[in-house]
Length: 219
Length: 181
Image (cartoon, rainbow over all chains, first blue to last red; front, side, top):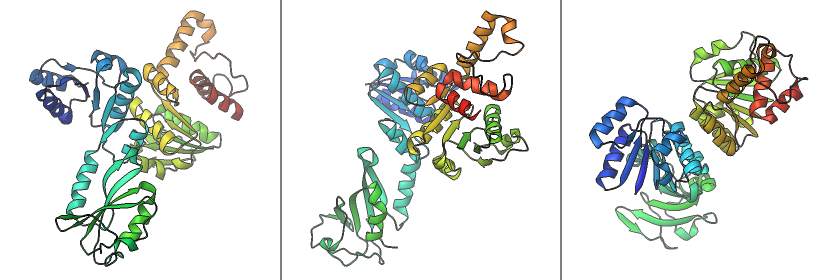
C-alpha cells in the first residue's frame, strides 16, 4: 500500500517506521526542516520538507496515487485540512486523522474524514475501565456515530437488578447484546435475571443514551 | 444581528469595533486576553478568552445563536476548522473564514464556506494600482470594486475599505454591508 503520512512528530515517525517494516511504501510530509532531516537520516529519503496541508506539497509527495493519507500532527486543524485537501484534490480513498479534542471526532466524520483516532478518548476509555463510574461506557460507534455500543455496569442501586431481561422497557431499537457476569459472557434470554456486578453490552443510538442510562443505572 | 468573531488581531478587532459601532451584538474570542487591548475603550461587545476551534468555548460564547461567525485568526487551518464547526456542528446560517492561501480559499469556497483571501485582495489591488497609475489611487491603494458601493460608508473611511474588501470575496457580504449602510 502507498501511505502518505502528514506530520513527522513522534506519532508520524513511529507510524512510518512500522509501515516501512511491514513492507508498505511511505512518504512523510514534515514542515520543520530539522525534524525532517532527522527522519530522513534514519529512514531514508522519504521526506518532503514542507507544509502537508498545501496541495502542491501533497502532489510532490505523490498524494495522487496514495491509498491512504494519515494526518497525525499535534494540531486538529492541520489534520483536518490535510485530509480535506487530500480528499478534495487527490481523491485519496482513505483518510485518517489524529484528533486531540474528542469533541472534534463527530465533526471530522461529518466532513467525510474516513477514520478518526483520538488518543485522548482512548486514554479516557482506559481510565474509565479502571475506575467504576456510574455511567454508560462508550465502547464503539458505528454508522458515523449514529449507532453506539455501550456498556452499563449494574451496581447495588441500579433499578434493573433482580429483574428479568423481558421485564425491561427498552426503547424500540435498543438491544442487549450480551451480559458479562464475572469473566463469562452470558447470552441474554428473556428469563435472564440481572445481578449486581453484571455488565450489559448494549446497542443503542446517540439520542436515546440518556433514557437508557436512567432505565438501567438510575438517578 | 449577532456576530461571533474568532481572533482579535488587527482584522478581527477592527471588524468587531465597526460592527459594534453599527449597533450589532458582537462577541470576540481570542486565546490571548492581551489581544482584547486592540479593541477601542468604547467597545460594547463581549470578549471571551479561549480557543475558537473548541466547541465548548464557542458554545459559551453564544455561537449557537449567532447569525454570522467570522474566523479571522492568523492560521488558515484554524479558521477552516472554526468555520466548519460553525457551519456543521452549530448549523449557522453564515460563516466567513479568512484564508490567506488562495488555493485553500478556493477549495473551501467550493465546500460552501464564504472565504476571504487577503492575498488575492491585495494582489488585485496592487495590479490595478500599477496599471491605472497614481491618479487612480489618490494616495491609497484600495481593492478594486467591480460595482462601487456608492451607498456604503464614505469612500476613504475604513468601513468603506472593508465593505469593498468583502465585495471582492463575496458579493453576498457586500450586499449585506450595503443594506446596513
